[in-house]
Image 1 (cartoon, one colour):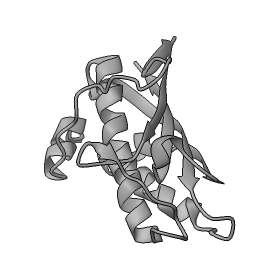
Image 2 (spheres, rainbow, N blue to C red):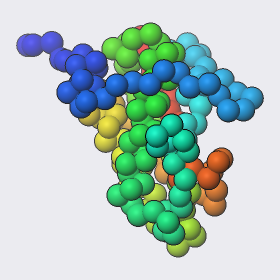
Image 3 (cartoon, rainbow, N blue to C red):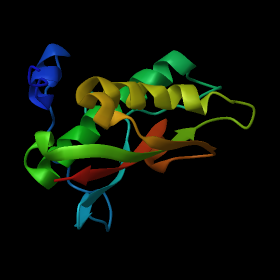
Image 4 (spheres, helix red, strand yellow):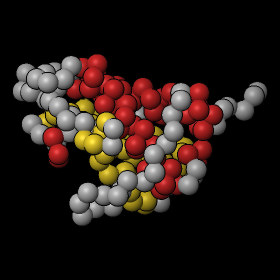
Length: 155
């Protein structure tokens, strides 16, 4: 049986370059490791290095929200790499928690969050399948449209 491609091979195939670890904007750590679990703090969606501002159901549609969630996933992967040193050490993406800045009548938060979930599955294969919550909220720091946190199990 051939060896499965490395996470870095998959990232290259997807045309993704991981960002450097971002400096927290407030009083928190970007990640905490406890045993085999790595908890990543919430990352807001960014476009061109600035908060990706918008509200789903008012100024953004679902497809744009999915792009924003995908961008967050890339930033999360950069932080996860900083936390563990080698993404091939990830045994499983355990949980994703997504906050979607949305109107009270918007009901497609789960579809927005697919932008993150689908990228994690593309990068990690079966190890990228995870438990998840997707919640609509009235506001996110700096007016961002999406914020996502992640828990991973590592070797």
